[in-house]
Amino acid sequence: MARKSRRDGTESDLAKKRRARRINRLLAAAHPDAHCELDYGNPLELAVATILSAQCTDVRVNLTTPALFAKYRDAGDYAEANPEDVEEIIRPTGFYRNKARSIIGLGKALVADHDGRLPEDMDALVKLPGIGRKTANVIRGNAFGVPGITVDTHMIRITNRLGLTDGKDPVKLEFQLQRLIEPREWTMFSHRIIFHGRRVCIARKPACGACTLAPLCPSFGEGPTDPAEAAKLLKGDNVEELIRLAAAAGGGRDGLGEPAVGA
Image (cartoon, rainbow, N blue to C red; front, side, top):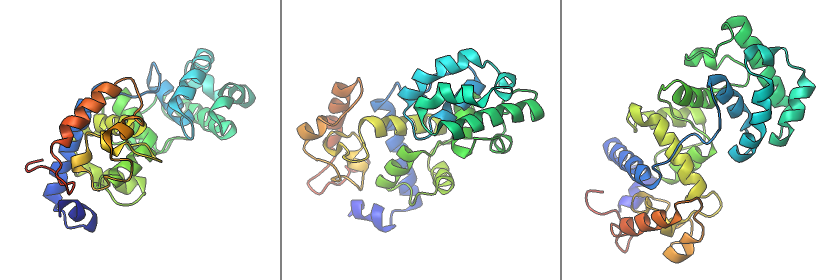
C-alpha cells in the first residue's frame, strides 16, 4: 500500500520529491495569501519581532512591537537601551528578561561588528545574539529575498505527519526539505506550512476530513475524517474555500485512503 510505504521507508526518493512538490502546489492553492505574519518595516525590526515570537503568538508580538519600534529605531538605540525599559515593553511576550538581553546584545553586536546593519550572510547572522538558523532563515527569506526553509514547531509536526521528514532536529529537517522542494519555493513553502498548521493541521486535532492534502498524507485519520466534523476545526478567514478544495481533493482517495493514480 502506498500509505504504508511512506511510513515504512520504502517510498523512493523520487516519489517523495514528487509528492512533496505536489503538496507545495496544493498548499499554494489553499493558502494563496500565505506570508510572514509578523509586522515589521525593515530587517532589524523583523529580527527583533522573530526573537520576541519564541514561545509567543504572532498576534501578541504584533500588539507589542509598535511601542518598541517607536522607541528604538536602529541598532544603536537597542545597544544603548536600559534593560528594564525594554523588559517593561516586551513583558507580554513572555521570557522577557532573556528576550531583552538578546535584543540589546543584538544591537551591540551590530554596532560593533556590522556598522549597525543586519548582515544577510547566514554564517554572520547565526553568530548574533538571539539568532539561530530558524530566525536567520526568516530574516533572509522575508527581508532579503534569499530563499530559506524555516523549521518551527509547525514545520516539524506537519512534515513528520506528511512523511516528508523524520525526527525533530531542526537542522536535519531543514536539509531534508531542501532536497525535496525547489530552492525558489523554500520561503513560500515555509509560509504555507505554517498557515496550514494554524488553520488545518492543528496540533491536538488535525482537520483530516477537511484537508486538501488528505490523499497524500500517511497520517490521515489522526483527526476526524468526517468532512462535516472536520470542517468545524478549520480556522482562518477562508474556511469555505478550504472546505471546497478538500472536497475536490477527496475525489482522489479510494476506500483504502490511497492517492489517485498520478497524484
